Length: 190
Image 1 (tube, rainbow, N blue to C red):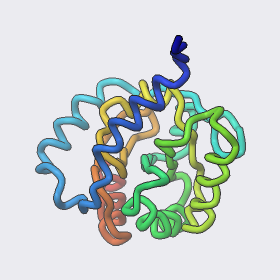
Image 2 (cartoon, one colour; image 1 turned 180 degrees about the vertical axis):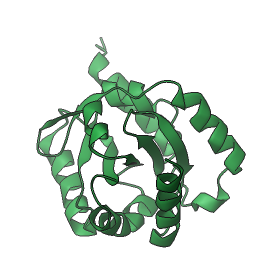
Image 3 (cartoon, rainbow, N blue to C red; image 1 turned 30 degrees about the horizontal axis):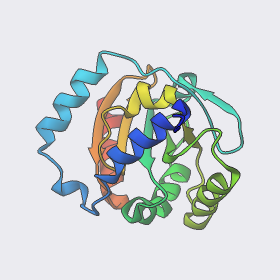
Image 4 (cartoon, rainbow, N blue to C red; image 1 turned 180 degrees about the horizontal axis):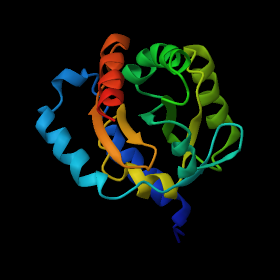
């Protein structure tokens, strides 16, 4: 008789949801900005709370958001070419801004905490290959329920203030200059 192991529920549900995404569309092809603004307004009423592990096994919580005025959380997957293609420029952005103003964090949506070492090593190799030298968190229930429940495609990028309030959401990949415009605009509004 088949015995169901509930530790596979989250990865299966998330993988099914995310497989419907990563179509290679650019962010400009996503729904109208008004829809993204409405989503950001609805989500901004609740500050993000989470606790997860980075690639080195360190615990990271929402308290990391207090380190910068603006935090960009980029949700990506190891199978997503648009995600991987934008990561070198995201690595450049992470290094170019003053850490008090801006920080970047990646969430690997298809590699879960406690997953086999081979999957984690594969993700680490992609991070190194792309030069995405910023913290990356492994998926867990806290991150999923705290932020990723509504994510239907990768890459999806969230912008949060130091209180953990969602300021904006971008679905799709963008080039460095468009990300700079978005970041600078949000910093000006703060």
